[in-house]
Length: 284
Image 1 (tube, rainbow, N blue to C red):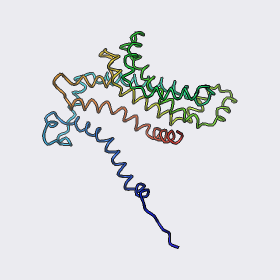
Image 2 (image 1 turned 60 degrees about the vertical axis):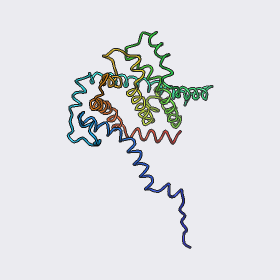
Image 3 (image 1 turned 120 degrees about the vertical axis):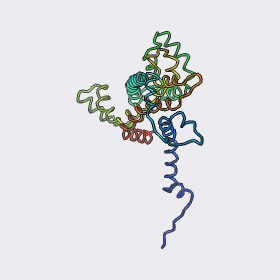
Image 4 (image 1 turned 90 degrees about the vertical axis):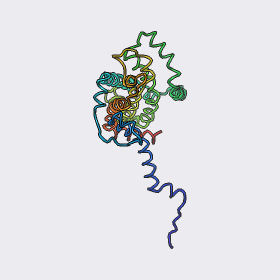
């Protein structure tokens, strides 16, 4: 008997060419803006305004990068952003690990309600929280400090990080913790010595998300900080434009400098982030 093969929409949709086309579309959509900014940063003002538009710079120059550091204290903006993002990420991971462990392991009476509240809070638009957060920071006399940004960034990243880690902790057998506690570990010791290392991909993924959110945030950094010495990178970049001038090559150079640290971070932890997102999607 000859085997009858059928072809239909399912076989067409699952074909390799279509998957390659979809991957190419996603790649172009993600890479094109970054490449355009990179090419712009290597052009002169005259080349940028020439018609028709040229995609690649004819005579690449790094003068825009030198001007980006000379026109504004870009190194200070980078340092402030890095410290704020790093400290808020560490705080977010500590709190979210403890919260996720409690939700995954403890027999909380209102566990479902708490999870629903976390999901609801994560949907609030940032602009609706601006005034209340500003009043709180002013009452605590924290304006124009790193703490005024670290605390809100931690609160904003906690819901997503907590929900992500809950699914990872629920996949760890309780017997491993019980064995650690029998050997003399406290519950916290078992958490940080057994559970967290086993959930390293999820912890790294949550940390990357928290870091990127803090690194890119603009609204709170602009509203809570008027001290030039404490400006973060997103706020500092908008200082390059004047009242009637928009030096796009210099601005693009500053943007490229701001993208590089995050890109390096993603490349270093790429395998852990991908495995964390994949495992989290399967467990979720």
